[in-house]
Image 1: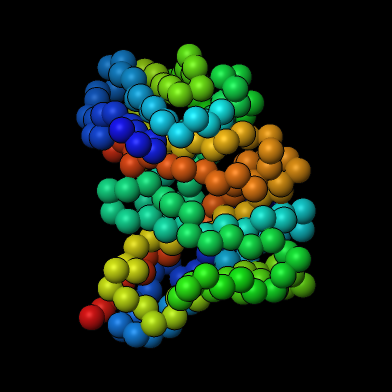
Image 2 (image 1 turned 90 degrees about the vertical axis):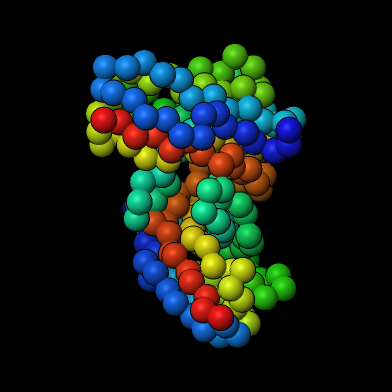
Length: 116
Length: 113
């Protein structure tokens, strides 16, 4: 595997379900990100982890719970979601968050989430 | 002030033509302006980026023009090809404040052959 991988690629869940999204980066990076991508809207940064520590939480509802057990893996735990949470969830990684924008963010292909 | 406004929302260009996508920002502290390209089923990928110390940057058929006084920047795709059909996102950030990109809403480009 190379780059940034995400599983599953598609997920359909009911509002009472609990599910998790997984992201893995094979680039040796230290920063990982979760974004939400909705149609015709800008990518929304949700969470940032730098060296396994959460550095950004953009006022994301508590029904989204991130976990970063090591620099290569990032999870997004989902529970009691709403239909408006249906979107493409993208994971990204970069060398280091605090080194500034000079280091490129590499994105995974995303998980298409549908909440019924 | 954190927004980046992108236009047009969608664009159809004939093969060989020039595709132009525009972005405007308000926050004068932004000092890094990348463009990302996203194909269906894929995540965005960095295409080209510019910093405000230059007014233009060219990489192959892709050029960023930057107007600091107008707080605008644009992507020009010369000799557009059907393989350029994708969604393009502009973004901006303040390098001193980490790798926190603010994205535009995206432009869906279709190049007709």
